[in-house]
Image: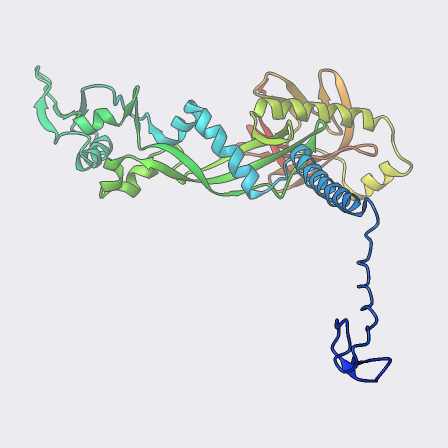
Length: 361
């Protein structure tokens, strides 16, 4: 904006003190506008807000992490695989049952086989091709009733494959595929499931990997398909492999709850059961013994355990007999009979619990 002398009207540059035309003293330039004053403590407040927001974010993250740590492990393929892998890594005996052969005295320096025992000779010939034994030497047993024998000597690779008296094909296994996590049951106040796992060898023996008969050798393993069934339970918020005895104990607790529930019959419940199931004879009638020593007796319309009677109905479909207890809250038992009717697999809620043996009088 142009400025003019108040005396002669001549324009002058901003900041000039005297007029160039008449020498008149020019008015002083307007003072610069003062900078806006920031309220006292505004910076401190901003820092406090930033700090408080950071602390809140940390608390939220920490709270979420804590909740995740405290939450029970979900039943999933990964959690079941982890539990089974941990069990097999820690339990050498369970691992050896999967990976080792015990059908012959492999710890001996020599195995003698009669000439007529063709099946044993065929198996040892497979191990000869794998380098575990030297080629057999035919010998005579001597005596007036002489018999021909074939002697198989243990080779160095065979000795390296031994664990005690067992011939082992690998050092470990891991879960390749697992199921059962989608069928979790509550039994005796505990979450349980029966997992079926397909396993894969880890650290496989070099002689097995190179053997032309690898498939035939694997078929000789106790679980030739490398598939196992293992009971799992949610313990301390983690899935763990449990033993069948613990599962049976949980089943007995459930049976006790069934007996208590049978004492409180709901209105019309018995009539409904009669409409669904027919009373009468069934193939379970009699006494059955559990592996732990307990005895169950099945009558026409009840199950007796330690003199405690649970009333209910039986229905038979094929080789499966279902017992439905009277009263609200009771859970049905399914018993799958063997072809000989001498053993029966007891299941509750679709989960196998134990195998019963018929008691013959």
